[in-house]
Image (cartoon, rainbow, N blue to C red; front, top):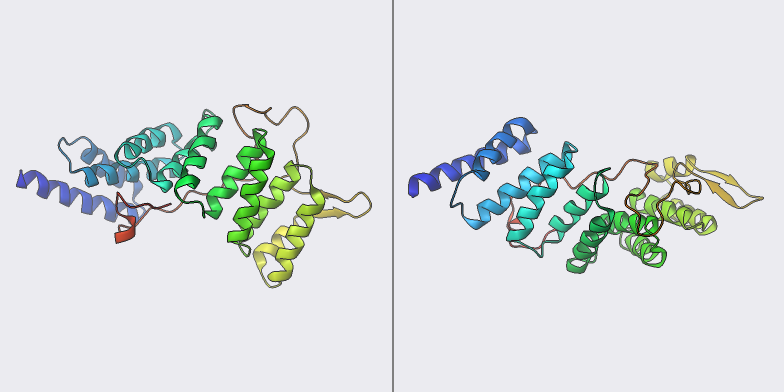
Length: 248
């Protein structure tokens, strides 16, 4: 038994090192080997599954990522981060299930409500599935939590455009730029925008799609005009990140 544990510990340490060095192919091989071992300690099995999921998600291998995330959730069903990542693995996949993504975003936020990135992704998806009130509330909450983050504000502006509220979108972006006049992120976002004062309409890369291109409520997949937010970076084992602790 001690020989097996020593092998497990060596493989785990090596896999962590390779992943953190960006050597994904080699790290996948190590963690794949670990996943095939029987009798792994629960914490090791959970970490193995979530690390495999992270790497597959970064490679856009969404089905594999979902499989490993499902296994990680079996070990730790109330982990906000795991729910967030499996939601992304559905939402960013053309073959994913938008309703499952929505439910996992909700579960993540039920565990840890104050996640601006999760609120942004959830809000846009909710709007695309016809849950306008819930979607806009999530987007506004995200900006309340991170008012000076360009990505969070951009999500609110996108959502307001989808909801056909361009005036509020313009005011939200102007207020953010006023708070952060030297921010290149907000300046770029403003420069991407074109304002028609007479018609009070805003033309953005993420304006509302033409009728018929957006899924009806209950539809399968949202249409993206911009790139999806990247998933969180691979976790480095620290006390507050260990399996069994809530982490989003």
